[in-house]
Length: 84
View 1: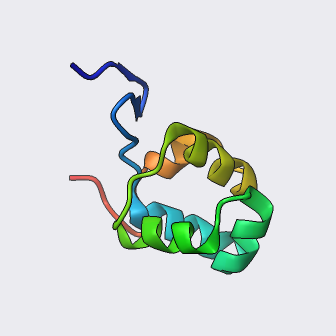
View 2 (view 1 turned 45 degrees about the vertical axis):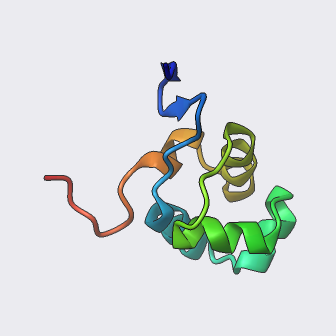
């Protein structure tokens, strides 16, 4: 059984990879700069942006802090995407 609180879940966080990339680019950061600001390795950021890995709640928190956005922003549609 999975217990959910907002967008976080015990079995992994469903973060939109395109949203992470869009927020990073809008902030003007390279993957290396976001890694420095968040404490998440550049390699892991790359894997998350490609959708190869799922982020833990702790990683989402670090990325949000590095981007200076609320955690919930990482779960929304990427810039230019329209909800149907």
